[in-house]
Amino acid sequence: MRRLCYAGERLEDGRAICFHGGMEIDLNCDLGEGGSHDAELMPLITSANVACGFHAGGPAAALAALRAAARHGVQAGAHPGFADREHFGRLELNQTEEQIYEDCVYQIGALTGLARAAGLTLRHVKPHGGLYNRACRDDAYARPVVAAVELFGLALVGLPGSRLEALSLGRCPFVAEGFADRRYLPDGSLTPRSRPDAFVADPAEAVRQAEWLLREKGVRTLCVHGDNPEALAFVRELRSALTRLGFVLKPF
Image 1 (cartoon, rainbow, N blue to C red):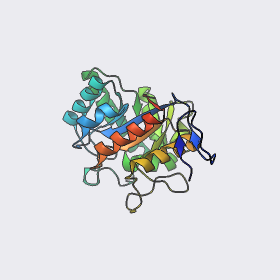
Image 2: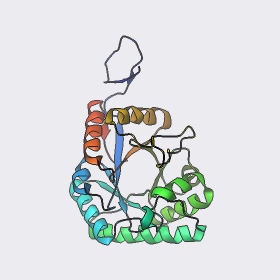
Image 3: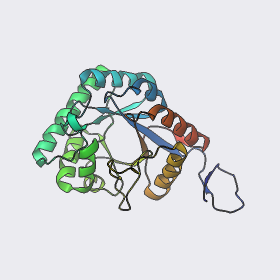
Image 4: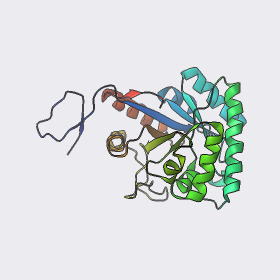
């Protein structure tokens, strides 16, 4: 079996994948969604995607997350989603391009104001849940998301090879994202949450997946989900393993 090795380490079977020390990777997490571990997770990550209040959270939760990000030197971004709190924004709702644009501008604008109150400047936008998945594959959803991000002069986070990446060209910086705690389908999309094999629970498996994402997909940021009941232990172990392998955790 192939495994990761430290820079300079040699394995007899020649099947190691070696990274040179100092390779940079961002570790991002969706926060401000009402999770119980936000305060403990913030020092472990380098970028926070803060919920804008449509799918979860609200002004108080968002401002608390942004203030915590400021204290810990964590980069902050907006995490807009569908207005569907009942399903945590994970259903793929049918909306017009104008509705998506209006909702994204509203959410990003609100979080921009809260970030200013916390002494921060937003750096990126990462759509949430159903909006993220739909926009990654459907131009009618990707176009208004890209337009809203461009309006605020921010970077856009999404799946590599997605429609978000294609349509952001020449309009806003794009940051390719991989998921450490989610599995993938052969076409590069995320395994639906309804499937029993959708999640990666073992930090060692997450590190192997991170290696694959960096090597094969060219991702610049890895996502871990803050709403996972085991999120704190998972992120601690993942961060420790990445550091041992020579990665430098740094905002993109």
